[in-house]
Length: 483
Image 1 (cartoon, rainbow, N blue to C red):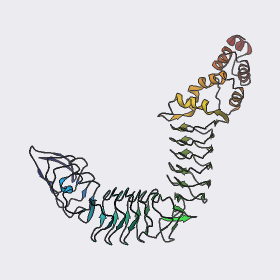
Image 2 (image 1 turned 60 degrees about the horizontal axis):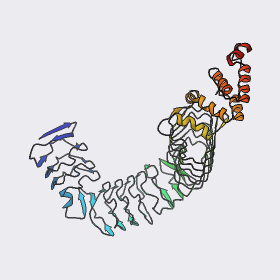
Image 3 (image 1 turned 180 degrees about the horizontal axis):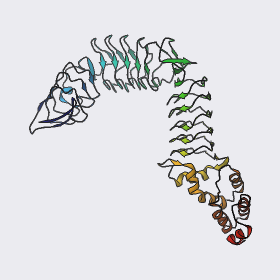
């Protein structure tokens, strides 16, 4: 057999014909993903002393593997590391425990008391155990891995020990817990640790919590958050979570309907308001950046005024704000990201500032009631503005430079103006600070108006040319257009 090892990590394995047993060489502490995936010929594997981590799916689908020698040095076991092996299938206990780590559960009990001595629950260990209704965790437990109880849809009660330090990401997502009492000395709550089904109304962050992950409490009934004044990492104001220095707004409980962000806050974190009942908000001028999806699915929000210091509107920030009717993008914004107003089905008007340079794709996807876009002081119908987006394939896959796009595709827009005799729109464009019609394209525009016998538009453009001295003399102009 042949092993490839680099810096203590086994990166490849080439089996010998008929080989059923292997011993991993001393000095190896970790094995890269996929090395033993689906090795159906293996029956026994011996891991060396000093080996520390069995990564996710490491021996997955080694269907004939019946014996694994695991040293005490292993302290990390990833999700489904042994699933679809004979060793896992024939394990004598419903709770599969390796080195004090629960890596899986094969039982169907409604009430489960996990034995003392267990220090960790591995990722996905109890995932989709639909029979579970009540779990009592031991006083020895320190860590609950990510997605550990994911989609245990009948789990209503969990008794948490005081020893617990870590609840990792999505550990209890889609679990309808009726009440949750977490230990005082909990240090880490991963993102989405508790989903919307958990019945948590009020949450207090103790002085010991070091990390509150993105949307760690997605609970539908959460009203407010409070923080110990002795916590060095976090603070709360009016039930909303901020960093200790009150410079970053981190998280807003689901049932908050009105939020006034205090002066001095400089950033709204990504997903901060997402899926809340927010109806009104005051954002101070001190806010200079907003994270992606910050207001995602704020379905009660009807209007919002953004501070002037923003120069970038991030991806999906107002996506699925279905009652938003009007959006005024503040001056100084230069870039608008992907799908910013996607699925804002009641949006009727959007103002884009003169500072805008680049627009992301899917900007107004499924905005079925959008009627007007104001750009450079000119109100375009959405249908007319969409000509730009469609010409640039923006509705499908590309972001684009707005000024370059206008210059490149202005003839199509102008032809539409002439066809529909939109004289009032043309007046707005001629008065705009942005030169939609410039020295380079005005002659083509005049000629098109002449060809289409659009006298009023023709006269407007000729006057514009005369006022701006964009021709040599009247005689030259008459000859050029056969006037």
